[in-house]
Length: 601
Image (cartoon, rainbow, N blue to C red; front, side):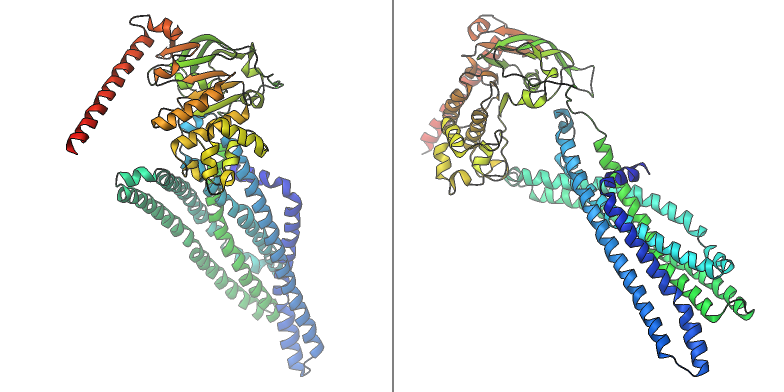
């Protein structure tokens, strides 16, 4: 019940509404019991006494009619108010839980996201939290309201005849075992169903995001089959859940029938003995049959509760996952960088493989305003090294210092506020051009946005859009070309005006014309900034003040282009030679292809 208690603690902030809902439930229970109680005066007072005397009292009928209407009014008002208030609490809890979960996930480290799919994370926020909404707004309300009603009916039964009441409730223990077993089955199946729904969400998101590749390779049918298989697995699991839930009402009806037979047998004996009046027995039977409805609903409540608990287990397991980079207590803001960035014997290993260092003993110092190029084969540790500067990960050994201050001793906001990032895989949002440029500086005025766009050589193509700076660019900027997206990303970095810049080969996937524009925009961006460039094309790093050549997670060489190229057999010299040969082969292939096209024409 830990998960249920955690859910209730989440709702604790709205205890005023919950208390009001409970008061309304008490009114509902009182109205329900009152309806059963009125059966006695109707049978004994109206039919038995008044009809026999031949004096059918209109006043007596009016009194009974008013009391019946009052009972129905109390029951209806209590039901409406309790349902409305608990639904309000449920919506508020879901809002808070969904927001809390989103913020928690977003605060995790980059390793957390690399180990999980977006479909998994979205499923937690949408499907699991939606399942919890049902238990908070409906299931708990039904549980409380119907439990109070059953209590009121049971109290009335014992008040009428405690021996007869015991006959009715003897069947209750028969419900407990099957109810418990079916509840456990529902919870297991629900957990499996949530995992399968998570897979369905992942497959759909992956196919929609990569729709161009799917179409280009004619894989629509294959992806459709993959999705259909996942949906079929979910269908089968949900059918098993439905089977378990559907078994509860017939079971309750049969046990209720046993109780009714026992009550009829015993009640007939009591009436014959003169211990019960017909009105009392009618009231007893009426209360017993009225109690059946709430009990039947409570059997369904248990199944819903088990489904919600299964979802809550997944939510709180996610909330209990902590890989986020944390600030030290009392962390101070980092002053604007003026002197240097230093790596001092830095080592890094992922938390799930603490003995496998992907970066080890990295030591170097970069002066303010210098351009640093980081080169090496894939897997050498280039991206890992730059990810340590904004603390996407924390170092395992050593320290990263800015102006001599360990970045673990400063606030994350002040640290990341001094770093701009432009990557090869440009990330833009489904918003306007202006909002994307101003993403790092919320509230920037239109003049500053336009100046940044001009510096990034983006203003001209922006003005050709139908709505200019107010044009929406679609998810990930898909309405723009690759070069246009890169220039918007550069404009975003220019507007942020950070002293430290990290570039992950922002031009490697562009055509010649776009690359020229982007290179020119990058030159504007790098001016007077300390820049770290992850370089795949070594031709772009000749003008670097410092080159770091990485090999197997270590800095093998440090120096300028001329210094490193002069070391025969060195890491940088080998990389440079390989790329020069590759460029020559590409050029020869392009020339041959051009001649072939010319000959065929």
